[in-house]
Amino acid sequence: MIMSIRDILSFMINYNDHHNPIRASTRWQNMNFDQLKTFLWVAKLGGLRRAANEMNLSQPAISARISALEEELGVALFERQKTGVVLTKEGLLLRTHAEKIESYLEQIKDELTPNEEIKGVIRIGVAETIAQSWLSDFLTALRNRYPKLIVELSVDITISLRDQLLSRHLDLAFLMGPLAEGNVENITLPTFELAWFCSINEEHAEPSQSPIISFSRLSRPYHDLTSELMHRYGSVGQIFPSTSLSTSFEMVASGIGIGALPTQLAQRFINDKRIKPFDPGWMPKDLLFTASYLNDPRSEIVHKAACLAEEVANQYTKKE
Image (cartoon, rainbow, N blue to C red):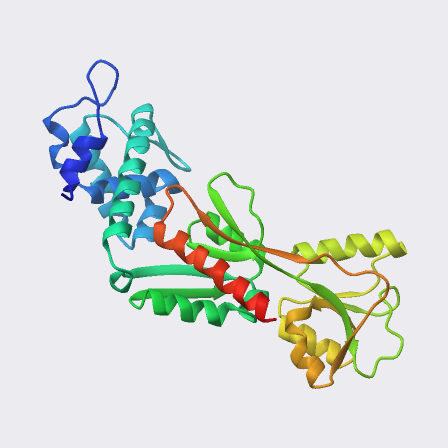
């Protein structure tokens, strides 16, 4: 039998008067999950205004829920500071139990709700390399599996995707990973091989002498490239960083410079006889990608979407 919220609270929050500062009494019989969810968002984000923005509620509504929860429990859950709020000792204890309740309810929904009935919004951030490769296949597969799920999509560089994920503005990010934060889970995706390309009309392409078209200045491949150039030639020469892969290929095809770019995305330009690969004796490092998401607590639908992305990406790699 499926338990009600009150039954779950009774089961999960096993306080006792001797050990716990939050007393087991009839005071919390009116506690509801909306209050606990609000409490968790305030605790995670460290402020009422940030929680209000995340939950699409007014700040007074958030404050009222927290006040009602504190009144029912008879304890202060937060200490107000100039920069926001921090959990009290009692708040830390409640957070532990509230996260268990949230996780338990997530499991109930995941196990009992058919895929075709799952509703909600999933916010996905994508690096452009993936956006131009297997993203459309993934979105089609996701739509087929969860037809009522709404996808909010943004394409950006990895450093921005990381910041948006950690600030909880994204639920799932396909980026150059893995991310090292303890509250992030990373599913490894297939790598993208980088190779050197030049204009079809170029006769003497050489990394030490030609302008190089590369990834964003803030990206890992840009720093890997500059490090390798310095090691091999004693200088980095002239590099044109770009946040747009399609623009980078166009620049190479136009003869503006040579490029260290993904081989999987170069085939169209090669087939059109606009660019060609060349081998200067060394190749840049492959691009490592992960499907990354937060695990505090883990959303089952986000986890399943990440696993689906891994499946689709592997199928794409095999076709290529």
